[in-house]
Image 1 (spheres, rainbow, N blue to C red):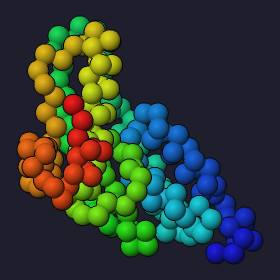
Image 2 (image 1 turned 90 degrees about the vertical axis):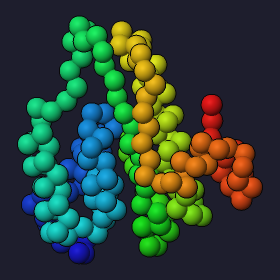
Image 3 (image 1 turned 30 degrees about the vertical axis):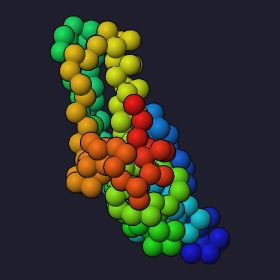
Length: 177
C-alpha cells in the first residue's frame, strides 16, 4: 500500500495495534504473540492485517469477563509455569520466540536446546517474582512452583548442571539459583 492509500483507510490500524500493545503490557499477556505479529506491519499493512486485528478485538470482547479474582479469603492458591519456544521461526532474523509469559529474549540462540533453556530461565525468573508478589499480597506459596518444559535436553541440563562442556556458556547465563 502506498502512503496515500494508507492515509485514506477508514480505520486506524496503528492506533488499534498501539492500544493492543498497551493491553499486553498491562492486563492481557495472552494476546502478546498476535500483537507482536500485527506490529510488524505498522507501515505496510493491508486488509488482511486489519481483519486479523479485528479478530483479536473480537477475542478480547469474548473474554472480557475472564481474569484473576483475589478476594483475600482464598487460603490455598497455587500456580504453574509453562514454557515453550519456536526455534528460529523468524526466517529473516533466525530468531526464536520464547513463550513463558510473553516477552522476547535478546540474541539468537544457536540451538533448540539453548532456545528452550532461555525460555525456561526467563519463565523461572518471572515465577520467582510472582512468588514474592503473591506472598506480599497475603497468598504465600506453600509448595514449590511447578515449571514445565517440553525439551528433554533442556531438562537434562537443568537437572545436571556442570556436566555439559558444550553448553557451559548457556549454563553461566541462564542457570541460576
